[in-house]
Image (cartoon, rainbow over all chains, first blue to last red; front, side, top):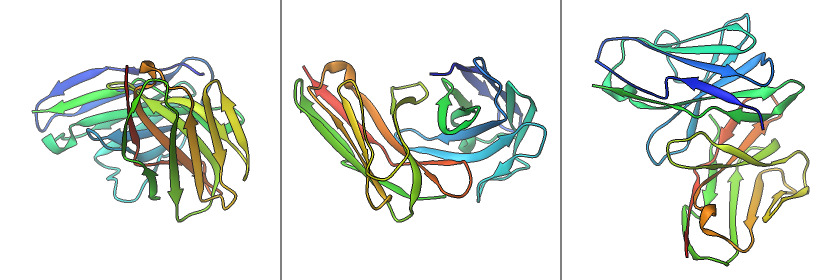
Length: 116
Length: 111
């Protein structure tokens, strides 16, 4: 499968601060990346679709001004959690689709965010 | 988002036993994927299914794309301790390229 990296793997921040999470596609150029969040013992919830060179498409109920997504290059997408609160603490995971194979997704290792 | 229900929610089995789990939805999907996730890691793709009725194997794993296109099944034969983890199905609608995940099946294999 494809190699996808995320940075940082873990981050602890204070309430009210912003945190940026990076997702990199190491094996191929990805025009589309996806961001998910996962609460303990729960499923992955799709937050948004990140499109290179254009605005992200957010799922219903996800605040685009709180979760800023930037897909500035074909190998990098960033998710910024702005003015973080304890309820934003979660496991954030990105995925990439292989070129011409949008039906296959490969996931990064995830970022554990804890907001104190 | 879409609702995909997986059953069973959890399984405790003896090493060597076979495992069956399924995923159902009220929506029709064009693609089904099965993933395994271990604690603190991202999901790893196990099997991808692209058309109704398709049966695909990957080693001891076999998955099927339901005829109605609203469900999928995953079987694991002769389970081993390293099969432990949470298994998720994911479906892709005909419209859009997003995937929606099932509720997960937690598998514990007792040596």
